[in-house]
Image 1 (cartoon, helix red, strand yellow):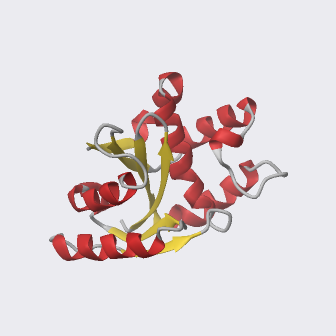
Image 2 (cartoon, rainbow, N blue to C red):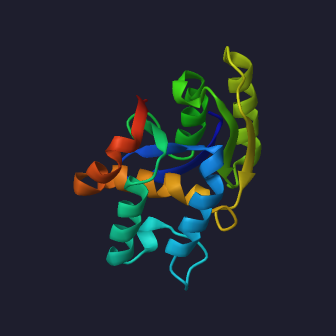
Image 3 (cartoon, rainbow, N blue to C red):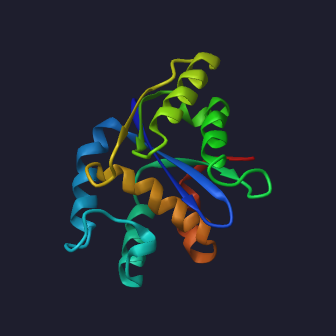
Length: 174
């Protein structure tokens, strides 16, 4: 089955790069459901800004989706911002969970040029068809909310991590 991958980051004690794989046939319905879940006074879901009741509802919803995700964690002992993101993106060459992805969508950042350079290098270094990639603003692509939600829950630990951990199929620690 073909799937697309949506990528965002979260910074807590460590830098977390999270990718969510979604089967292409499920993309429209998942996108619509996320829009319905979004508070009316917000342009997107961003977990650290949400009220506790919204956080709980969102985490519960996401934990029941038919998706899988992967994480790349960069310890602050290894690298701090702004070096952690390029290091995590470079590690995509080791991420088996990307095999079969048709499109990699990253949350738009000011590091777009650096991201593109790193992703071109990664694509040249893997022995499979690396997905096409693009940057989008999460306000316009609800599926980018998923990696933010999962990375936030995972990084938060405790019952939050427990709620999303069954979705995580691969973790690379740097």
